[in-house]
Length: 228
Image 1 (tube, rainbow, N blue to C red):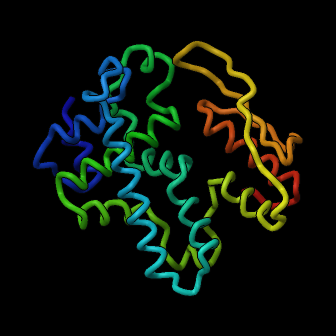
Image 2 (image 1 turned 90 degrees about the vertical axis):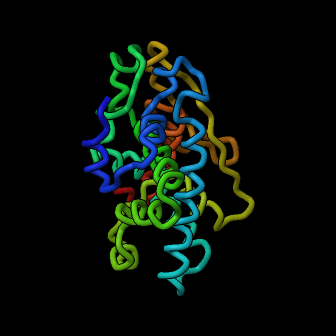
């Protein structure tokens, strides 16, 4: 695949093109071999992303307490946000997928796109250095003005729910993936969120994480909080 169009979309030309190809290679395409897919790059990209966003918030929101910074960071680096960032640059059409994933909608699967975006961050970091990677990441992060105004939609419902529950230290939140349906490459997962062992929300999604997020979102809504 020619990745020149992707380089144009992200505004960066790789010196080592193989790094970009590795970042776009899903495990289904490489036959599950870790040394041929983007999973190791995803691991590194997550760390670069977390540090960049943490530094950005710490530097620019010096009156925000730790809990608020944690909540904002979680909303920016969660799977929902990374999926939307990936969609903005049309990342799905450049991912190298196995036939099974290709036939079952893998190019638009939330977890695959989010993971590929993190792998792309790592590839940019390794090829162009810290400043280049930070510049790329911050191109997707909401402005400080938007963050301060509260107009940014928080997508990490699990973190938000935890913040609510922490107001009562004796309460305990847990998650349970209760069921899964469908073929191996197109499964739907079902999850429940429990408060002190009692179900307070249910959800479903194309990954376990997505199902848990949906369950947390329902629980927050049932508690009377806005979720959109």
